[in-house]
Structure formats: C-alpha cells, structure tokens
Image (tube, rainbow, N blue to C red; front, side, top):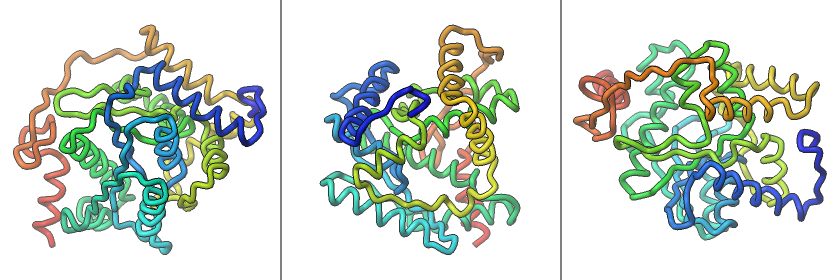
Length: 297
C-alpha cells in the first residue's frame, strides 16, 4: 500500500483493517458498543465487508437490504439479494429485506420512468427511495445508528464533484458522521478512510462472495468520471485521495473552509402520510413520487 508506505501479509492485513476501523469509529465518535447498528447492505464488497468487520469487532449489527427491481441483463437486484442473504445465513446474522416494488407497487426503474418521462438515469429516484426507506426502517425498528459502506474513493469523488460546483450546503454536510435530529437517524461511514482497493482485498482475503458488476445504470455517471480523474492523480501521487479528504475534514473542523454556512435551516415536520421528516409544505418528495406513480398506472 504505497499511500501508507506499508506492506502486510494476509494474516496481518486481516487484523489491520478491523483495527483501523475501530480507530476511526472512536476518533469520529460514530457509536458505542452498547448501541444497535443497522448496516445498509447491497451485496457489494464494501457493505458486506463493513458488516463483517463490525461483527468481528463485537458490535450489535444487523443488515438491511432494499430490493430495487433493477435488472440490466444480469438480474442485478436478484443476484445482489441472493449474495446478501447467503452472507447473512452463513454468518448467522439478522437481515431485514424490503422490496420496493412489493411495498409500493413499482420498481425503481418504473418509478424513474414515470417521474422523469424517460429522461435521465434512475439514480435520483433510487437515492431518494433508499434515503427514505433506510431512515424509516432504522427509526421504526429502534436502531441507534445507520451505517453505510462508503469508502474513500466514494467520499473523495463526492467531495470533488461538490467542490467543482461549490455546493456549499452539500460540502458542509459531508463527513464520517451525520448526526441524527428531527426524526432523522444518525448516519455513519466507518470505511470512509479506506481505499476501494483495500476493501476489495479485504473481501477477497476473507472469502466474502459479492456482486462484481456495477449497477447497470451507473455507466457513464459523473461519480465514475470523478473517480477515474482522481485515480489518475492517485497513480501519479500515491496518497493524494487520502490527503485531499483528510485535509477537507480538518478544514471543516477548524472552520477554515472557503464556504459560508447558511444559518437559515428549513423547518422539518412529519410528512402527513409516511411520518418521515420533510421540509415540503405538504407531502414529502418520496410520497409525492409514489402518489404520482399510482395515479398514472
């Protein structure tokens, strides 16, 4: 690992990853051993590796899988669910499964088609649905914290995109921990300082079977373009991504970011239909989307 000036054998590497994860959890005050954790799992290497690591560290961690109804020629959702359920069964872990189509009558691609009239990818609709359902399930089932498997490559790419647009609101909200408030679950990213390659190596060495394919709708996305650009920088300057992300966290902590915080916060109130917090005057964005889909079927 050139970025760390470190080389480890298999056994020591499989010790190093959990040790570093435990250090990050403590450093950023993500959660305590007494708290119940809900891990959002997708069948990919990062989320399954995170679930594995937290279990090895002794945390009370259950999984949540959201069925999105995405095919793309490889039956993407079916395969990712199969691998997630296989991992949970083999490790005797508790997994909650929620199928969006069964719950709300339409899959993510269909909801996107209705919402966007066939223009653009379903990514925005998918993100909206996942945020809504992950928060709802975490709150309703009494979990203290929601953990996601975002790695350093993910976080650096998002930060890069937000910096290019100088999206102050999104820049200021990014970080390892998003505190819970007003009906929103606390969200944490314990893998935020690990490179994607490091998590791939961990999953392979641990024998974790995961879905290799990217989501069929991800091809050509901005996030992948940003990752490729940062990969070129990382190749020329090992450690560049980590320096970039840690520098941002330090600047945010010390108040030295070149963005101004808007003190006017939107007032949140429970959506009259689903009860989830929203700043919209009536129904939340998710419920409006579902109502539109129902009315047009």
